[in-house]
Image (tube, rainbow, N blue to C red; front, side):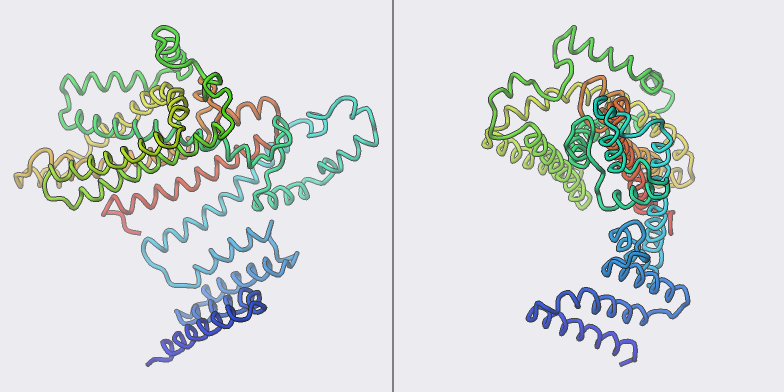
Length: 484
């Protein structure tokens, strides 16, 4: 047995032994976390390639780690949680990685750096705004009392230098302490975002998924039979809805379906008359369960597609997808029927239908045009000509060869579109009075609720950065030509 393997084996045995002792002697648990785990990590890392860069990564890891757990002030960057995050990322650089894992490691580090830059820019934008907390929201009678006014200015840190404010802000951000909202005092900003985010996710996830599927299928069909009546008609319709002024379109939808036809409610999240007297549960609790029901249906659809990929016949493929969806849908309906909350869930769904239809029409236009243009380029490739020359059916060439490659730009647009949903589509949520992230960001800015506006804007940027990483990873799985 080589020295490296022997050392690794001894390290594993030592870890198991220490773990057993830790379970038997609770007093050793803290020392196990602080000393043994980092020591074992260093030993394991040294068994790999011995390069200066890897040793430097280990040094950064240990300094950041012990600076956080021992709370050494001059070793903590922003907050202990940020130190632990940097330690985990730096530790991955102590190992030799290749291909996709190496790419993801580098992208995660870039995202952390961009996150710090983004939060910094947002902070200085709000810092440059005229006035401060004490002049925006205090009672004029308090401002006439010099002693009380000065005490509140100290409390809010108005007199602190800009760098002190900055480090306080970064510390609070990485500790998930976003402050208290002025509009909804004394509710914490984090609680408000946790309430509004699911509403935006539900609204825009439904619209994005439906517009993506509709745009993908229509786009590939009209591109495959380009130049026909369907192609020209769909292209004109897509361009109209892609370039239409969004507030005007929303007003037309509200006037047509809510005022003229009276099919859907004008605005709002629920009908208060239907919820009058309900004390056992809240609308938010029902909405969260409704959101989980949607997630379960999406997972069932994805599982059906994965199962269909193993089926050999078209009939079995359709049976796999529709069968799993039918079983899952029936189970969800039975749950809502027996829970006694189905009536109230239907009221929420009734209010969300018109916004989803409006967003689907707008999103479908862009997805269809992107898919059509990409398909027109793909069908000219040599491998498509080769597939046709082999005698493969047009449907197989279109779906398995051309459409898969043409799907890549659409996937990027889809993932980044999901990221933009966190901002909530300020126009859409305002037009339909849907209290999501977009509505919150708009009204917090209008009312100069700085903590809430700062928290909503920062959270939106974080989600966009994560979506970029997901899009890059999806590219590697969808396109075999991409190798990191």
